[in-house]
Image 1 (cartoon, rainbow, N blue to C red):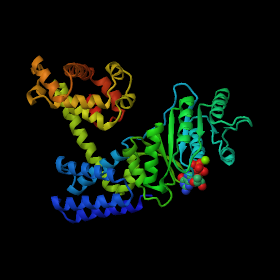
Image 2 (image 1 turned 180 degrees about the vertical axis):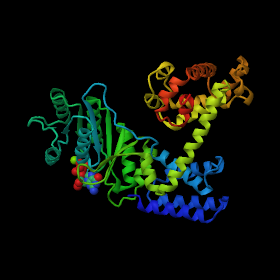
Image 3 (image 1 turned 135 degrees about the vertical axis):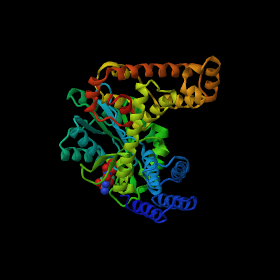
Image 4 (image 1 turned 90 degrees about the horizontal axis):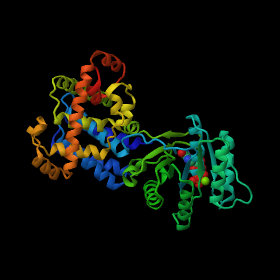
Length: 456
Ligand SMILES: Nc1nc2c(ncn2[C@@H]2O[C@H](COP(=O)(O)OP(=O)(O)O)[C@@H](O)[C@H]2O)c(=O)[nH]1
Ligand SMILES: [Mg+2]
């Protein structure tokens, strides 16, 4: 599905490798070609612009990993940016705290809503859920019949409605009751579509949203329509507030640009892609795997991953030594925090760790993106000497630092307190010695936190 783009990008890298040395000129030329390749793949021009700028900035700024050739380094940057463009992490479906969860399936006519409703029901039932479906498309008699046929094919239940239920809200209400009575935990609501976005439909969908309080509103976008799919996703999001996108017909000869633009333009993640007409042709969307598929070059990418791994390992060992010698500075604290950001949500990472001692307390610590950004900004505003020795940061300096980093004195105080706590906790952790080390040794911890807790 990304064959063309993939081919072109690989040619760019091959040419670059042929040049032997990476210069400002051939880098510039490579970026131009990447830009054209993305535009030809129908990626939104704003997304392309952002992408190229980000790659350029890093290619110039970042220190080159010595174990990689310059070309490999560029490939790494392009890969990282592409994953970011695609949404960084796999966006999982959200469910309500109290079942049944309602999932609204919305989109234009012919985009694949009814088919996707069936696919999703099947996928859910294969993943431990008990879905039930309902069609609230009361305008075309055939629409509800179509979902009934789908339900029969995949052998999953549907709420068919009674003759006097003629309003979407009535159908939705009865379907929810049916879900509760029959113990189904997810209600999939296939909604009516139009050829174009119109006010009447939007009003109807808003009413359904209010009534159902859905845990997801998934917009179904037809990849074959390219940038139009992105545009209507954006429009639906502005008017209804979607929570994710299912991109259908990715098995066709779509150029894939929609997949590469939707996240950046709408701010909402791609959650699934449809890759065929059959009901098992639905895949959860994994940004890293898709980037891999686009870039091809499996060998080079796994080499890059290995090099990254060993660098993290080296850093981790150094960090451990510092901990034991009590040399863990604010600068190290900042680096660790940055590592955490690279690894993804702290909570999920901590979820993998054993529930013992100080780690238990750590699990209650919630670190969000904004907080990480704030912490990094504050530490960046300190002088190198202050980062080495936090005792130098007195009241007057705290005010200066707050001003310099666009935060408050309260924020600076909090950070220093957190740092002192982390230091103390890690000292006690390293004091726990062998027992913890043995327990943790069996767990594969990714770089950064592995350095914090692993193998002590
Ligand atoms: N090739 C392919 N066809 C699809 C996919 N999803 C839906 N379709 C087809 O698109 C057409 C419209 O689908 P439908 O679910 O009725 O769209 P709705 O009007 O939005 O409910 C049907 O012919 C489907 O078989 C897909 O992922 N791949
Ligand atoms: Mg339909």
